[in-house]
Image 1 (cartoon, rainbow, N blue to C red):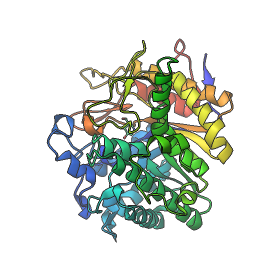
Image 2 (image 1 turned 135 degrees about the vertical axis):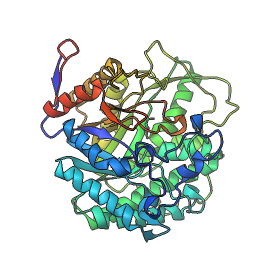
Image 3 (image 1 turned 135 degrees about the horizontal axis):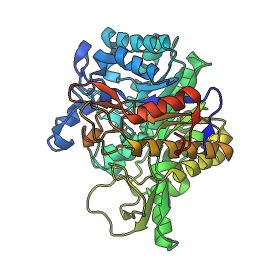
Image 4 (image 1 turned 30 degrees about the vertical axis):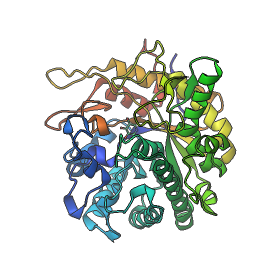
Length: 456
Ligand code: IFM
């Protein structure tokens, strides 16, 4: 069955600075923690890094033209903090770059959706997110950027996926800065949330009509059986993957069961008076990044660091589902259920809407001699997840948009460039070649209509 999205529904794509910009030392920019992490032997597959990436810093006008040609009404990008500020001093070249990008988008009738933090923290900040002071520095950064872009950018997201920049980065060591201490990862998570809340307060005071929010990655966790041990391990994973972040933001407290689970690691004096009031400052939109749903059983305690900080005994059980090139199970029903759950439990009562700010698939793309990729597998993925969004809306969830991850193939963090999430292929010469999925998505973006597989 074909289906439609309402007038005004956001349909576009997303990227992030480190994954596409390159030019890592242009305009006085100093290292981010990702520049540093990529130099650690063995940290990144193939020893790759974002030094050149897609060279978007120099090709942004071409990329905006592409976004426009693909009929997208919204483009979500992130700002690289050390590109615009060097230890508190404004870097004019970096500010100008983002200002020109925003102007170019607006000139093409594409709404800019700005994410302040997609992981490229200035390396110069002592202790990174372990240090409470980083939250204050973040507010300064956000307001300096808002001074320059606030007249044109109307949608501001504080953080992208704080689960990744805390537990995956400071407990599992998979992302920068590559550390493995559970108490530190909790410090990082709380300071990230504090940075979010204080920034929302400052932006709201400066710009009451802006649309403000945060983007969280949700990976629903289901038990493999109704055995109490499996039910409990799924609860614990859900607690730190999902509820640890959405609950304080929308209700002003950390989940009680998660606090219990983490008692032995929870740092004394971490949460100070007023922190949770800031963290739960009202927001307008929760960005939802969804890729998969995971099933867990209780097993042996892992002997390697894991991001599941309260569930080292969680063992993922694969179902009989197709997987993407990341090995992630394709489960669009999980997105429908997640959106309904978020609306009913968290965002609806708090008065915020939902936008899917990332969803997409790395696939094993094969280009023909002209560089064209006939990626029917990615089209199927996108169609089924767009249908899930429509079903969630029909069930009452207030979903206002869907942004595909990603506009183009890019640097997939610890996995390097081998994993291709793009609607647009980026080849070795950095040529941008729209895949079949880009052409398919362009029809959806232009019409707001998703044709069923038979008629598409
Ligand atoms: O590439 C990442 C992105 O930076 C954050 N969300 C998940 C994507 C795919 O792994």
